[in-house]
Each structure stands twice: as structure tokens, then as C-alpha cells.
Length: 308
Image 1: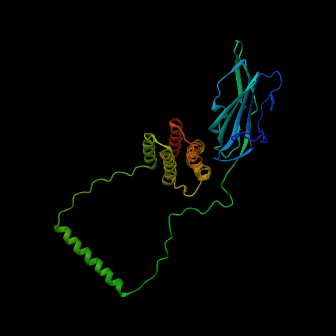
Image 2: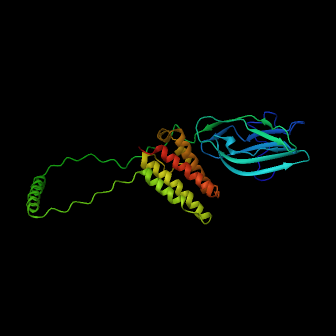
Image 3: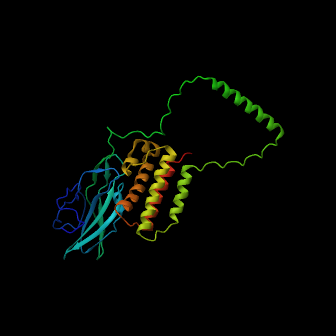
């Protein structure tokens, strides 16, 4: 087995409607989906492959990654094999589920036109159903985040010095009143600019990232670390959601996050953070187009949760 290929013993969760394994005689087109398990973790990448076969005298239509929606995809590679009669194409992905509900991928289709001319032919495989497991432990979600140490109860004190303190305060007040009567009033203070809303600050930082072109792998890693930090800080500032020490699936799958952003915003948030994780932990090297998609998902999450 060549490195990077799925094991032949992998479970075929969904196979082509016209049959899995080797192509049967007389079949011109086939397609199927291959995954290693029917249960995946929320926001955690898992291997997925699309296998397409066609006769050499046919010209297949171009493949579209959108066929595997609602999964988020990171392309891994494409392999092509052919003999005197057939061509087999295997497209490999790292896929991500961004909802805690069961994920259903529609049946994959393949269409092709005879090179010599004629009507277009098509075939369909079977759809894919995946159970999604949360990485949060419902029995032990962790301690709640508090704003700081609680204040102690006040102590009751009685002493003669209380009377002296009150007298000193009254004397200071009288002296201050006399000074104000003879001293000119100070100039009015300059108006204080309103604080920048968290969503506006996050978008301003996204604008700065969009204008940055990483020069090497280290700069690319720093770019994605900052994008993830902007999202995490925005969640804390905008709604007080705890992000320190929590993984991407734990943040995006938390009940308070989904209630705050809704399904669309939570999906965008999970997608943006997952892309940053790929660069940080898998040392992926996303190009400018991929970085643009990451920023678009991040902005969509902020737009879903920005206060009106």
C-alpha cells in the first residue's frame, strides 16, 4: 500500500449505486464515497475519498467539491489509474462536520459524453450518513468562568477615630467650597470618544490581515494564529464566552456559542477556526484564495453575532 492511501480494509460507508469494488463488465460509469468510519467528531478532520470510473472513450464532466456539501473539505490529493479500457480517479480529502446533528451528503453523480459524439450518460452512487459526536463531556463541562475573586464580608468596627474621620471630611469639604468660590472654573473636558464595539474592532483587524501577504511558512503560521486569536477575543468581548484553553470543537459546539450565533454563524465560526487549526497543527500552507475563504467565514461569524 502506498503512503497516504486509505487502508483497503476501511469500512465502505457508502458505495456506488451500481456496485462497489471492481467495475462490472458493461458498466460505463461508476462513482462511490469511501470513509473509514460512520461516526466522526465535531470540527475534527477525517479522511474521505471519492472514486470515479469511466470508459476511456468517454469524457467525464468536471468534478465539483460542492457535491459533498454540507461537509467542509481540505483537498489532499488526486490519483488516476487506467488500463486499456477504463480510467479510475480517486480524489482524497480531509473533511470536517460542522454541526452536531447527523450529516447527510447527497448521492454522488458522474456524467460523461462520448468522445465520438452522442448523448450524455450519467450514473449515481449512494449518499453518505455520518453520526457526529461532540468532544464536550456533558457530565463534566468544566468550571464556569468567573469575573474574579469574590469580595469578603465587611467587618463591623467601632472606634473614636470614626468621629475624627467624619470631622476631617467635613472640614475638607468646607475648605474646598471656599476655594471654588474664588478660583476660576476649569475648562470643560474634551468629549470622550465612544469605545469601539468588539465587532468593529474584529473587522478592522481582519482588514489588516487581508492586506498582509505572508512571505514564508513562519509568516503564514503567524497569519492563521492571529486570525484565530481575533475570533476567540471577539467571542469573549462580545458575549463573554470562555475560549481560554478550549479547542475549536469545544468552542464552536458549546451551547452558548450556538445560541449566540445560530446555526449559520456557528458553522462559519467552526469553518474559520478549523482552517486556522490546519495551518497551526497540520502545517498546511493555504494559498491566497484559501486565506480569503477563511477571512470570509470569520467575517460571516462576526456578522451573525454582532450586536445591533
